Structures are given as C-alpha cells and as structure tokens.
Image (cartoon, rainbow, N blue to C red; front, top):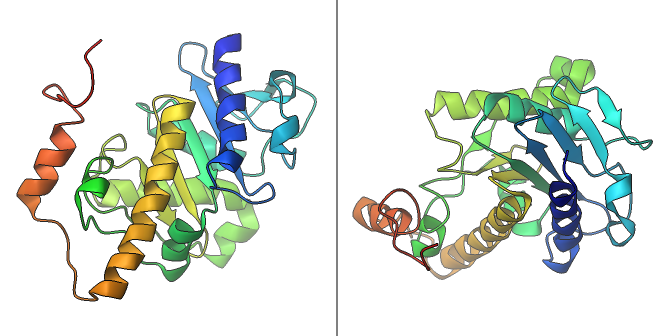
Length: 232
C-alpha cells in the first residue's frame, strides 16, 4: 500500500476529533487500495493525536494482518464486509456522532427533509436491523457488516448514492471513494440529523422534500451532468 493512502487515513482519523464527530476514541477510518486488495485501518484504542502511518494496521480482504504490530480497530470485520460487498467504495468511517447516533438508537431512518440532505444523500438514510443474540455471540462485528449489506440489498440502494447507514441500537457508518470524502459524508450525516431534529421541533409535521427538488439537488452535484463546483 502506498504511503499517500496511509497518510490520508491518518489525516481523516485525526479529523474525526477536530470535526466534532467523536469523543474519546469512539470512531475509526479505513481505506482500501483496490489494486492490491489491502486495507489500512486505525489500531484499536490509539489516541488520534498520536496516530501515525507506522501505527496503521494493514490487512487483506480475508482479515489477515500483513503489516503492523498493533491490534486493528474492533470494528475491522464490519469494514471488511463493506469492502467485500460494496466494491465501488474506497474508504469507510465509523463514528458515534451525537445526532446521527440518536437516530440509530431510536431506530428511525433519516428522511431527506431539505436540500442540504439532498446534496449528499439520494433520499432517506436507512436503518440496518438490530442483531440477534446468536449473531452477537458468534461474530458481532462481522454480523454488523452483514446487516448493513442486507439492508441495502433489501431496499435496492446504490452505496455511492446513499453513502451512509444507521445501525439500530448502535451508531452510523459512512463511506466514500477516499478517506476524506467518507469523512465529509460523516460530517454531512451528522449535520443533516441535527437539522432534522431541529426541523421537527419547529414543525413536527414536516415531511420529505418533494421528489423533483431532491432530483435537482442530488444530480447537480453528482453524476455525468453535475455542474456544481469547478471542472478539472
């Protein structure tokens, strides 16, 4: 795995704190080099300020450590399951950001109430089901990934169109093509969750954005005909 990708993973992990997404060590970022099939992930319990590229744990898609002396994040098996099934993604972020986690704990999907949400997520952010007692006992983190993949298949969702999920009783995961893009999606998810809660405080009857406005705002930032921002 090249040094640049490792540096991106370190930068994104450190930014979890400065962005306000995590307290203590409640989060992690990983990235995959699709050419080699290797994944770099934060080691378990390491303080973000102390993290460097030498401390990252490098694994293959089978979960075998190929580089590094530290234990990988406890959420590693969830990351691996997402990489194996969502082949378009390049990085994964897990946080316990307060507002998105509140939706997760309540088991309530995050509806698209306005254009800020539509700029980042093509419709509702779904909730993945709670795990069974057997799943928790047998292989908790792997089963977490399975539940996410299962939910996206049930709803026929495209992972890169809705790059986030809420895990019932747990917290959110997001993903993207790069570590910083996955981080941006986590920031957007938290802000959209916060705005949804505030919107319902002002008007409990607020409903989803009209479909034609959703289509306009999502398509102007994503896809072949996107025109938001500067062209390369």
